[in-house]
Amino acid sequence: MTEQQPLRSISDTHNGVSRAEHLMERTRNYVDAHIQQPIKVGDLAQHLGLSERHLARLVRRYLGISVHQFILKRRLLRAKERLCGSEPLSVVAYQCGFCSQSHMNATFSRMLSLTPRQYRIQAQTRDMAEI
Image (cartoon, rainbow, N blue to C red; front, top):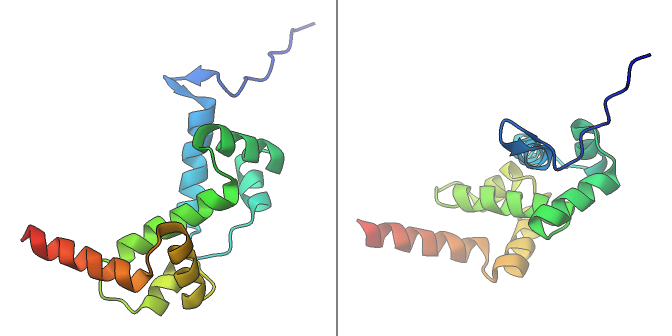
C-alpha cells in the first residue's frame, strides 16, 4: 500500500515561487488575455482549478481587494496605456472590456478622480514636458 502525498498547500514553493504567487500570475495573465471580453469570476476560478471562494480569498489575501476590483484595475491599467495614443475613447473602452464609453468614464472617474479625456490630456502634457 502506498502512502498518498498530501496536496500541496497554497504556500508551498516550487523553484522559489510559491503556489499562491504562481496562481496570482496565472490570474493576471488570464485577465489580461481576456480583457476585451466580459470576465466571469466563475470562469476565471475554473481556469485556475479553484473554487470561486478560494480565488476570492487568494486575491484578497495578496492584493487586499476583491476579484471584481482586480479585474477593473487591470481594465483601467490597459485603458491608461491606450489613452496615451490617439484612438477614440469609444474604441479604447471596447478594447479594455468596458460595455460602453460611459461605463469607462464612470469607472475612471470613480476610481481615479479623472475622466479618460482628462487623463489623456495629462499624459500628453507629461510627454511634451519630457521632450
